[in-house]
Image 1 (tube, rainbow, N blue to C red):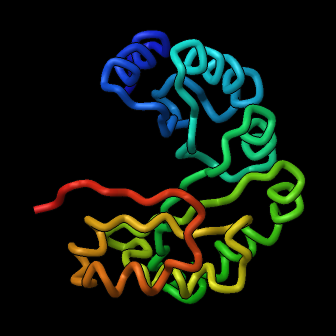
Image 2: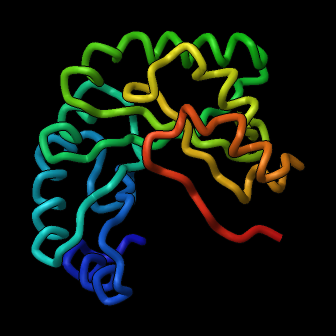
Length: 178
């Protein structure tokens, strides 16, 4: 939702919710290049209405991790596209290098990268997510299980949960798909 922050916070509070995932991307209220400056203000706007930013969808760079840690946002949720020009395995290795590079910053600020399964040429299942993140402590890199995308991929719900249950860190996506 791209409403100005006060209107967005009013809308979310009016729905009876207690938190949000805030998108940090071009076209949204907090831009990646201004995250250190603007995320604290966004957190204040939500807090004034009794809301917390529970996660962001955005980049996993040091500035974003630090901004999240400074305002108490515990998870940066990402989806992991597979670059078919280099293939699945090389794409996962690229992500693992990115994760490894920011592990000290994640640890310092108490923030985790949450990898969500998605669709198309992205890591699309709980099994694929586990394959990508299994070597990491969930306090640093965790699964964000998206049940709709598991279903679209043909992965049974009970099996998907069993695959990543030990890799979750407080965030699961539920939505409809048909």
